[in-house]
Image (cartoon, rainbow, N blue to C red; front, side, top):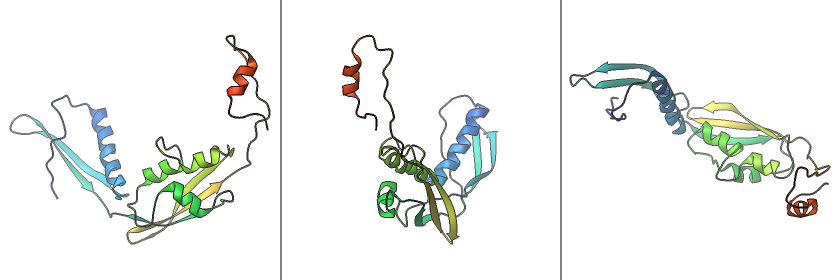
Length: 177
C-alpha cells in the first residue's frame, strides 16, 4: 500500500540521520508486533517543486503476539510473581523492547532485575529465548540465573571532611551482614 506522509521539516538531508531514521521506522513496526519488518528499498528524488521526496518500500511481515511465557531457573520468586512484575500477558502484541525493558532497567516501574538486585542477588541474569512460533503467536522461555545472594562484609567511609563517620553511617540504609 502507498502512504504519503510529510515527515520532514524544511531542513538539510544528512545521510547519517537518514540511516538512523530508517532504523527508527523498523523499530516502530517492531513495537507494533511486526518483528520481521524490514525496509526493502528506498528512493530519494526531487519532485516537480524541487522538493525532496522519499519512497520507502517496507515488508511488514506478520503481526505477532505473545503466547506462553515460561520461567526456568527461578527459585526465589514464583512464576506468578515474576509475571506480575513483567506485565506482559498472553495475547499482547509482541514487542521485544518492552520484554527486555520489563526484564531489566525499566526507568519508570519495577522490573524483574531490580526485584532480584534489590534483594542482594547481584549476579542475577534473565535471558529471554523464543522457543516456539505458531502462526502469529510466540512462546518465550526466560532463563533465570539467580546466583548467590550477596552480603555486605564491611562498610568503610573515607574522605569525609565535613562530618563525623558515625553521622554518615547512621544515614546508610544498609549495614554489614
